[in-house]
Structures are given as C-alpha cells and as structure tokens.
Image 1 (cartoon, rainbow, N blue to C red):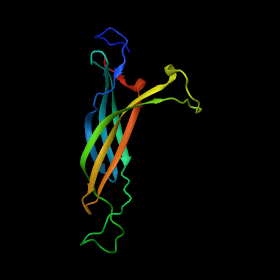
Image 2: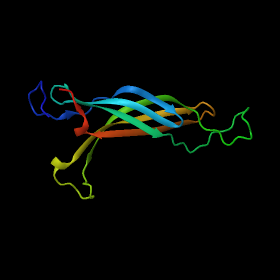
Image 3: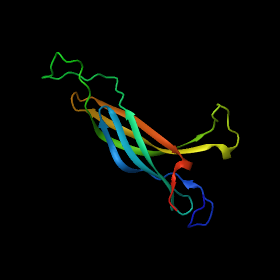
Image 4: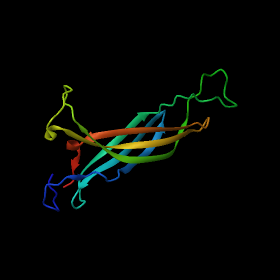
Length: 149
C-alpha cells in the first residue's frame, strides 16, 4: 500500500497494541469482547488500515461448581457464575502458507496475511471461588481491513 505521507510503498508496522472497543464480559458461560486493530506505516507511523475484531468463545472449565450452604439439594449441579478479574490483549499475525488443497504455496506473493488479537482472560466464580484462566483469539485477513486514507 502507498502511504499518503511518505509517498512510498511501505510495509505495515504490526506492533501497535489493539484498542479496546468493548471490554471482555461473561454472559451465560461465553466471553465476548471487541477490539480495534490498526495497521500503521512502518516509515512514519501514520494509520493506514483498521478493522474491528470481535472475540467470542465459551468458557471451558473442567472443575464443577461446588454446592454452597443454602443451595437446594434437589437441584442438580450448580453452574459457575464467572466474573472477569483481569484481561490483557496482544496483537497477533500469521501467514497462510498452504492453499485450499493443502499444498505448500511457494511464492510469497500468493500467501495470505492475517492480523488479529489474542486476549487472556482471568475469571473467578462468584459462587465457589474457583479461579480460571483462558485465552481467546480471532484474526482477519489484511485485505479485508478498511483503508483510512
């Protein structure tokens, strides 16, 4: 892509931290969040492309929730009631080096680049106190990012 400030064809600086649009939240055992991912000019730092990346995933904790005093004994096992205690987001990037038939792509021109967000979420059950940590991620192909210029 050509940078309007530098007037050169430039590469992207991908070390820019993702911006949080919607902080991670837990609803009915699934985590959702939204981040803005920006690709900037490697020469001058001007923003060239952006995308909003949605994070979704189910909480997978193998430990069952323990019954507490006052719980009805006739009910089954209680469900965890997760609360997010801490979260951190990191930028990710990967290159697709195989074609749709599983063959190796030899020319880098035809390889696809994906940029995304990896979110590490630490949670605690408000019922039984179990702590759980899980990582969620999502990415988008660079060509699907919106141009800002």
